[in-house]
Image 1 (cartoon, rainbow, N blue to C red):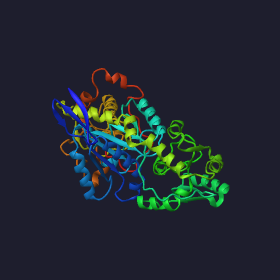
Image 2: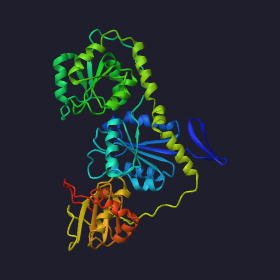
Image 3: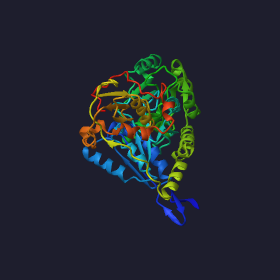
Image 4: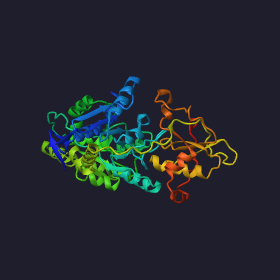
Length: 476
């Protein structure tokens, strides 16, 4: 019999009288002390607070940094065991994460997606993550990712976990001015076109519109809020303004709404707008100035500020976000599985590394020595199936070096598997991690059980050449 109890805020499992250790959680995000660390602070703090309701063992680490920091990251990753959780926030440093190794050890490997995207990962350079789960701040992104997964036949768990309420210092209340200003927190002249929309607002509001892009620490944010922010309304404009189907700027909304700010936003994706109904005033781009004039009329008593912050806290408390997303249920399940005898590990096919560099072309399967094709898969198993489907019909394919992370399947007629390149996690080879080399027979036996090849031999099964050439020589 297995019973879950709560002790000092940490979810503990009791199995036949034995208390199972609480899970360890490592959250990796941004560069320590840099701008990205401040940008990601709302989601990192939300994750930290949410996990602390289930386990006291939560560690925050920088995703990028010096060689010493890299050694520390590697050590923290290697300490994680079955039932633990690893969350990588944002694109920086994702290529340094041993995703497959974490999943193989039974660690829940999560990639927290931080950008507005039209698929699961956006346009990442060099490589893509290989997580077990993708968490995201916006329904627009999750719906786009779900469509991509259905198209590719991949299976990755998706969860909606936006940045939530963050307790902030409460400055002495300031009277709402007779002519409040509208402020944009961030850089309003973003090259994508936001500057055009900001200029349009300036023509309508004149000096009542202003912006600040010098807030890069919690201390400067608190000082700005006490001196200026609490006396103004706040506006959100999309990077690509004028498109009402984009996600909201939740990394900006979290610290503002936690303080009870009055926010006017450009229209967003319908499901995302519904999450912030009653908290944010949404308006068409050409009506933002009018909406500001309507909702910012004085007076705005302190009670209204407190009520809005309380409403945001009630709906977006980290614990509630985790409960809604099923994170605690996930941790209960993994704790139960960790307390049971470990199943036999699946065969770890092939060897780490790659045979050699190849051109960005399929090659000659009748007389050639090597070639490469682009994979269109987000999971390792699906990538192996697609690579195997190609190798099976290529007569000269006797070895393959493949990487789902790099979306690449390279074949070779000859390969010295005892002297493969890219086997070590050195900084010089960081862009070629995650490759495995298999013989043809090993690949087909591992990736293509009987009957599977026929279902893969259509347009989706055969990898296609990538239209975009890589900037560097493809390593496999």
